Length: 287
Ligand code: NAD
Image (cartoon, rainbow, N blue to C red; front, side, top):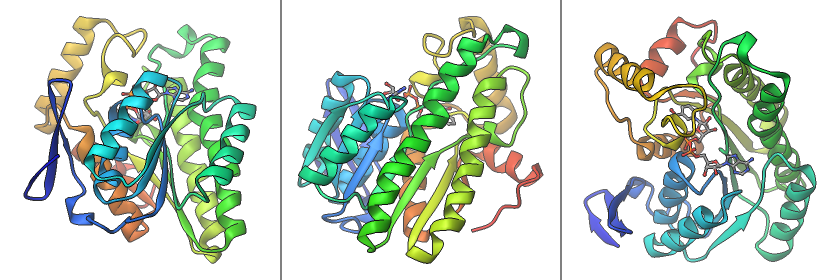
């Protein structure tokens, strides 16, 4: 790893990866951080940012190869220890097994980032009950399992901690193109707020991160089922024209996640259009 100012840059299979978090150097030193959906995109960038700040990192993803790669890079970036765990966050039993294993082998998690999520585009009537179930199973139930299992361990230990849930600007910005996805994220936002109220007295913070459009696999045509390549291109252009942004990098979302933990922020709109939509929404922006 090569230090350049605030950023650390390392070469990942020919691609240059830049992890933010230099400003939080040592801030998470020795802390145990678990990130779900860490095999790609925002989760991977978040694992790297915590690694750079010397946290011990558990990279969880259903994609074994992606998680392994993130753990390996996390060690290179400065994590004293990093592990990969292959788990589907929507699988309650698998999550229970993970929680038991983590407690027994690595310790109680100080920071939990429930970030795994899947995208689904399509009108309300094009969205089948199976589609709804799939999206809610991962995006909502995955977060519920994580909060229940690891939040309980944090509370029982009695030394505080922090839970970050990746919601989305879609949580407060209705869209006829993303009914299931937006509903799942609105639920994650509310869940986060309720749990924040419940855990406040125990020194455990809960943050909901709400990015707008970020350049990751989830927003590429291949993963975002139902959106064709041309439509996707048009959408990206429109977003760029409207908000003067292009290719908002996942590293900047990771930076917002670390800041949310440090400052104990509640609801965190990340990209410019997410901030705009948040101001116009019914949700009062607050720290
Ligand atoms: P991504 O597709 O690059 O990463 C998602 C990761 O989650 C992948 O590695 C995938 O394998 C993993 N994953 C998916 N389902 C899983 C499951 N059931 N169990 C375990 N792992 C699973 O996408 P991303 O943009 O990095 O998404 C991360 C989070 O950010 C998601 O919750 C997403 O909804 C949210 N988000 C993304 C954007 C955006 O524009 N990219 C905007 C707002 C919110």
